Image (cartoon, rainbow, N blue to C red; front, side, top):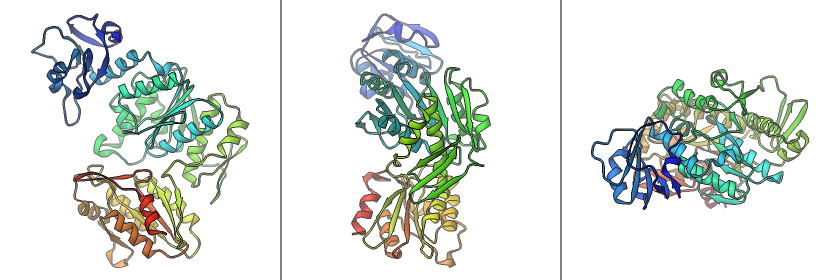
Length: 476
């Protein structure tokens, strides 16, 4: 329990009506979760407005309301606090309620279009292997030491996020490594957290259904760096066109890195990167992963880990689930499972797969685009798949409420049909079977877009679907 006046002490309060000495048992922005003595924060969302659910929250036991709109009809025995921005308010309230857990460990934020999961997971596994107690918040899974929690979002909502960090502190964690999505930053989910450092991987075409323009997308990423303190550090991929802009107003100490002139050796066994007078060895494959590995190396040394220890342990780390993950078959056909769902990621993965495909063998790609998401990337991804694959099966990837066939038409728009080098099959399981049947020993089937996901989101709802399981069934 916390005193209301203490919880709202650092909020930008416009006006308060009612008693501020109330005892508050919990904080919620979902009225269905409200219980007795709760504080309810009304937030205007993209489809629903929390201000419409204030009455319901009060009926369920809320004794205090935080909102950023005027409330004309106020209930007696309920305290109303109007603020400038409810999203910022809920983030600060959560931190006050849980006594600022981000100040009690070293929190590292990772942002960018591609590479967030790989970078955050490598850092978690690296520090875990070094004997440190640490936490991970990622697209695939959230972890506190060896305990795993489901990942409902790339970045938790503020109350759940701060509660998770508080539990991490209680479990003795010294470090936490967190993906910071553009949606989360824009929606103030990480507002007010104290970051020891942040990493920028890259910025490429994605999420324009939400941000509308690349400038707005970049601005959301920039906010993470703008809010770093002078005690923090920023590790930035200088080779990305947006790097200078993202770092332009940060107070943190900046560490730019470039791999344009770096000697990078690739093989099926992994990478060897000449960096900082050392040779960084990694079991990850693909030149694009060199950026993730170097970012991890720099971050670990900035956190005080000796170079020789970083080099020794980083060489043993494996990629996260669904990131360039190899699957075999009795037929001699191999599959590569990868989460590539943006044009840049798909191109990088296909170029990497081409390098490891035996001469004379083919790449067969299965790829789709999500429904209710950025439509501008559909024909771009279609052309990339067609240009860099020997054969492509265009298929569904979480079509949601959209018609899967329409999505596939938009992906194949402009492709020469007479080549016989592609087909469309909206049923993903059938698409995988077609690709497997088409392939011969030594060929590689790229399963692109779903990676670690074990579901499909259809018009009818969410169903279980695992590409790894599907491959296992047909490849015996």
